[in-house]
Length: 286
DNA sequence: CGGAGTGTTAGTCG
DNA sequence: CCGACTAACACTCC
Image 1 (spheres, rainbow, N blue to C red):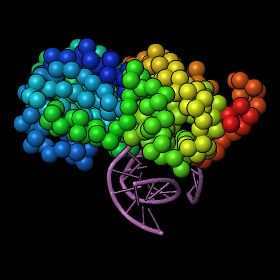
Image 2 (image 1 turned 120 degrees about the vertical axis):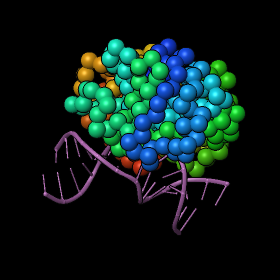
Image 3 (image 1 turned 180 degrees about the vertical axis):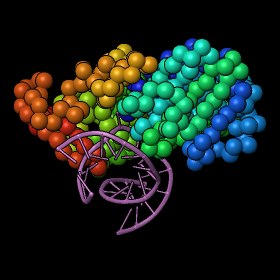
Image 4 (image 1 turned 90 degrees about the horizontal axis):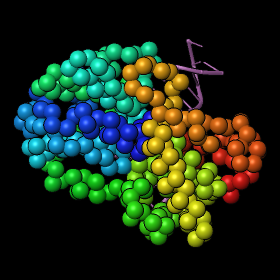
């Protein structure tokens, strides 16, 4: 699940709880998910204090007192669960139906803090990763990532310039490309294109000035609303631990194929664009 | 039971 | 350089 709004929600939720904590121990059940050498983690992460939590695109960055930063990507099914010393849980990311305790069979990396609290990284499909690198190398690590769409410096002109790098690809593929705009995934690509009334299959270069302006404001409005809604929880499952993101109930396109368009009443259509399931209105998206 | 589909992206191939 | 496609993996749904 986690796209920009979900990762941002996780960041905000975890920030207050993790800041200032000292990492006492690292437990790794699936070494494959650790994308940096274990000895580096032992040397630079264990014993370190957490200075801040940041986010770039869909990546959570945990800045440490040692001049190093932990990067966590949840990919499709990653989940972070914080458990305080008293045992209270707080989850973020993809809910796992029927699994409501931690650690569980999908817990592959555990950070234990000196106050007895812990952060569990669960990931059913094991696509996610945990990296550790010098904080000074961060901008280099993100050098291929495009502009943050919620930043004020993201203007229609910036979007146009970014799209011009991928002129021949579909506008949907371009939005999913993290080097064009950061943090957009399948849900918010469909939502933004619906809001901007642009057909997902169109070549990026075919967008006119007015198209770009509409798409730009649509991306920002969609993501802003999604962050305010605490993201999207696809699963109807409620586990009583973390709160559910409510954007799911506000969505207008994603997963609504066969249902009526909220704008014109036409039946929404499903197609495969950029190898991804895509929902759009054949009438009001042009 | 088989096959398709799932919120991501790095890497390969043409 | 560019864009399309696949692999990484586990699970759910029809």
